[in-house]
Length: 345
Image 1 (cartoon, rainbow, N blue to C red):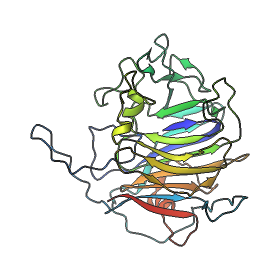
Image 2: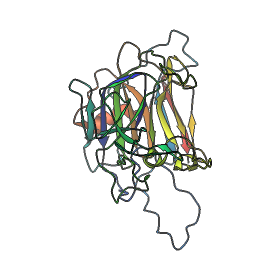
Image 3: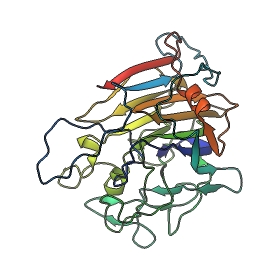
Image 4: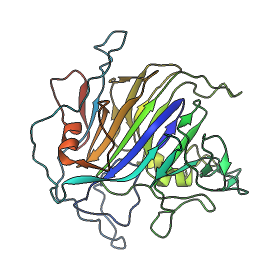
């Protein structure tokens, strides 16, 4: 997962739930599911893994935010989504709860369990690497996200401006189970599995950039997800021959859980970018939390993605019951703050 300021992060939690089919040879921790193609395989290629036992006919993307076209300024606050809901069938019933596998709190002293914070600041004298073909690799980063350091450090919770970005991986360094990563870079694994939940509590006050590069986007915070293979190779741009080096441009893409698209904007919206593959978004948004914190969840479950604002009372506990998760992903077609659309068949 990736974060861009200006943003104050109070806590982050990651949960996993047993998959019907576990793809143990893949590291897709920071990506939405990438669908199979209909292209025939050559006899020299290994067979595709079996499809999961349960899969909906359409992959859908749901947002629960205030509707931009129906809501005049001032923007209304989004409805909480933690109200109790009727029981629904659950396809995967082998376990009764989701386990918290990573947790971060900025409450002093800031602490992270199961999370390593990195940034594109590679320096071979400290951590990561640098060259003129590919720029800075991933590296360990200081608590404020500004400088490269030599060892993993707990994030202090503040990204002062949009000039500062950090990346969060698991605390498991890459070994034989990771796909290719740039030599000499600081490489960690993402969160594997088809079913997982990411939750964050944050605040996005207004601060302009303070550096000399006026071409950079200013006062535009964001929280997004990439396939872990992208930042481990080259997160931004191409090589010096203008050739793409990561799978971003060939289908891995990214999911912007929320992003402010212009300087000082109040609307934050969700979009899936997958060049050459299925992608989409709509005009729904939630109001940027200024002077207050807001809790937000991204749920990847049964090949659906739910991005939703949580109620202030929601607790990022050590586990989540299936009833809690069903309440979070419950879709109400009559609600003006819910949006549901397909991104594949």
